[in-house]
Length: 341
Ligand code: FES
Ligand SMILES: [Fe+2]
Image (tube, rainbow, N blue to C red):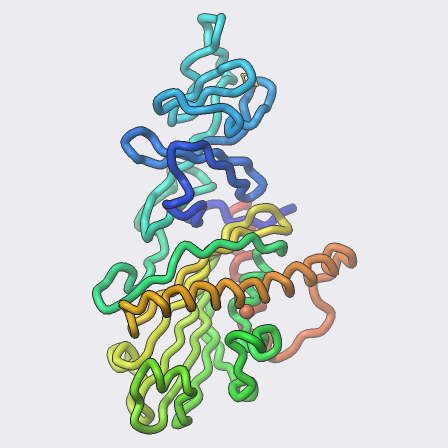
């Protein structure tokens, strides 16, 4: 059975994807149709008419109601049927689920579990989004053909970057630096600092460093679905406090994972940085470069998934580098198991 944590907020779509046209997306094996009401509020309903099961996304909007494209049943934003052509009585079974949604950080967040538990305060806090001095490269989306737990593992696995991302972000110099793993309630973080090293040319260009620097990557995973990789470059010899790190070059690289099916994942990404914030060319270059980087991950997770499906085995050999990924997997599986109990 699929392992999903349902009582959590997931990114369902970027705000720009949903408008007055019916937009469909499958999440945790459930077909969902999205649209906006005339006042702009987003709505998500089960994308399956209870009559003959035609996807409602093949129908169209009548005001704020969805009209099925087969026999014209109409559903309001709560999922209740409001009209059956040619018949007075509305059958009790003529209804669809209406999913709780919240729009925040240019994204539409969905709650797949018990609507009574949908508390918007639980939406993950995206650091520095919209704050002065910080720029956002957002709206990234890819469909990754792998189980989301494999992808969550990949995102807490610094060891792969040298080999998978040789042409983009890979840096052989860091592959021998040991990784430190920490864990707290609901999160795992793998980190590695390279201290007192010459700044790489790209950091020199962005940061005007006079001498050596301390560089760090923190691979944070907030279960069940948010990854934030922090990259810091700062003058060497300082304390690694939040305040001083923010005075150096700092990047927050977010990925929001939303299971589509057991073997496919919606991979939403955005990146937030504190340098060259008005540089439009850099903005475009970053978008293209990151898209390429994540496409490289997709090739890997797709091939891994294929072998896992063929063998029914997740992994045969365990290494020290699996410490953080294994903890992330266990944390999410434990959450799902507790929820199902
Ligand atoms: S299938 Fe939707 S109204 Fe018949
Ligand atoms: Fe990667």
